[in-house]
Length: 164
Image (cartoon, rainbow, N blue to C red; front, side, top):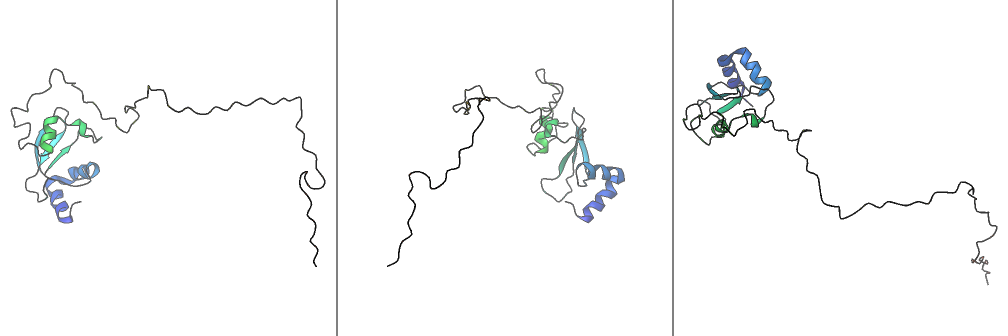
């Protein structure tokens, strides 16, 4: 979260249009120098004047679906402060697309319907109980037991105790 003074200073530097764009997609205002673009069209910025440590580099994604898998590995290393030079200035990082590499970015589908879901090929150790019920015979109607008068068989009636 930025302070009011930093927000107003960035608004003056970047203008209303970019201010609205950053608030919509980043939720914060940042002003810096465009360092380069990757092959997917993402823009990378840096601001060395900022007083917040490890928050001086950021990316403005071309696609508004923010996903870290849309960044080239060289730019990811620069964003994570693993290297000091961005890939646009480092001759070792300017390789383009390798022959074995997919030219299209592969979207990260974790937590979506397209996510990988393994299935078991092992027989379960426990099986569910399947009850077997004998079908009722509709020809014999269900009879209610007859009411029995007196105590049930096998029980003695209690005699009242006489007092002496």
